[in-house]
Length: 86
Image 1: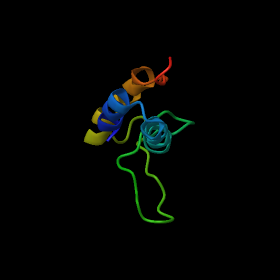
Image 2: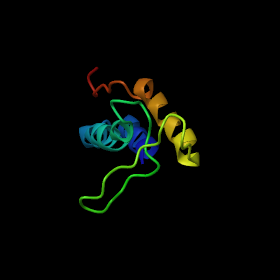
Image 3: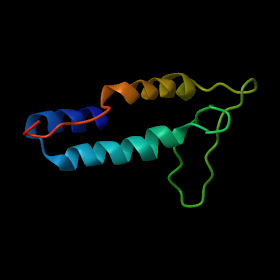
Image 4: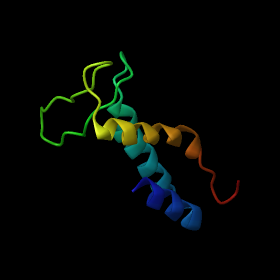
């Protein structure tokens, strides 16, 4: 969804797409990393009250941790957006 949202913003310059991108990036990608250990989640739980399960440094390494770490390359991908007059 982030790729689509970024492209829609580039075409339309509608701020709702950049706001959606920012909201999704912070709540899905940034929140998938444990701030204390740096380890990532296996998946994003959708059930209310269900805790996030983070991998450990040596005991677990799931396939989603390998692909999920790629998400953090988006830190530079869409650092800021500009409007029609910029």
